[in-house]
Amino acid sequence: MTTQITHNPHSSTSNADADFPRSRPLESSDEIDLRELFSVIWQGKWLIIAITAVFAIGSVIFAIMQPNIYKAEALLAPADADGSSGGLAALASQFGGLASMAGINLGGGSGTDKTQLAIEVLKSRQFVGEFIEKHQILPELMAVDKWHMADNSLSFDPELYNAQTKTWVREVKAPFKPEPSLLESHKEFLKILAVSKDKESGMVKLAVQHQSPFVAKQWVDWLVADINRVMKERDVSEAMRSTEFLNKQIELTNVADIRAILYKLVEEQAKTIMFAEVRDEYVFKTLDPALVPEEKAKPKRALICVLGTMLGGMLAIMIVLFRHFVRK
Image 1 (tube, rainbow, N blue to C red):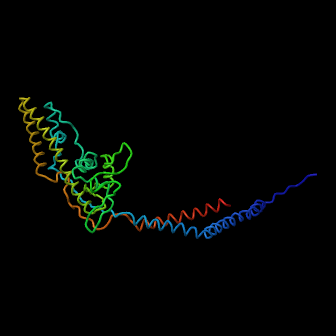
Image 2: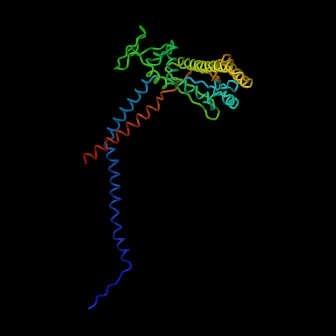
Image 3: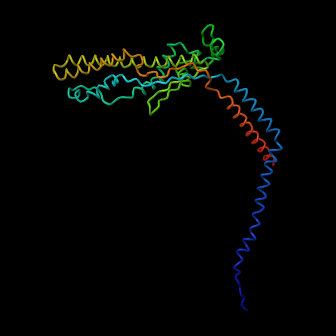
């Protein structure tokens, strides 16, 4: 006896139809979970409101306690000393071929851009240390507590600095000392100093932030004057050493062509010294000097309050949901 097996072409469709309702409980379970989620949040609404309120009040108190910080800014332009960068490096680019024929090594390369070099010197530990020591501004940098607008005076943190005896009283662990070191003051100074150079125009913006707008403006003026002076002294010193070297070479040779080249090099060094002596704005020309700012640069108190409140609300919702699912 044979058994005939027939194939039903609709069997796969029937199986699919049979399996289709099985996905509906998943959708309903998702919907229940979403409702449960909102239900849990609603049940814990008072805890959420309480935590959010605490964060909101705390952010307001924190924002109010932050002192106003003012920023004074100056716009500077590179000052080219008649196309001459000074020193043997610039002379090498102009007279390198003739000098090499004469057997004199002046060094090669075009050297570093003087503007960028001045910016790096401005940020250096040596320059900042000399700047702080020259103007005696270490207490104003490291120990200011508050600026008083009424009489334009500064008060200092008594736990750090005694203004009556002008002594440092802060308590620190070794190897630190009560008076901040050069490394500490340099690190703190870089936090309030901002120097940026526009790549297209070459203009330089120099800004200083401080609790006192008058101090911020004064420090910007001092920085511009000091960096011009320091860079001028560096180039004059280099030019004088170069002139001394070239004069010795002139005494050692009797060849007329070589002596002519050396005299030309001495002349170029004399030009460098002359331009340095007659220019106070040696590296940077002040296009827009710093003014006493009237509005604070920071803190953004409204933003602090909004972010603090949002953080408290999100943290409160996470706590309510976490507590619910842990219990479940």
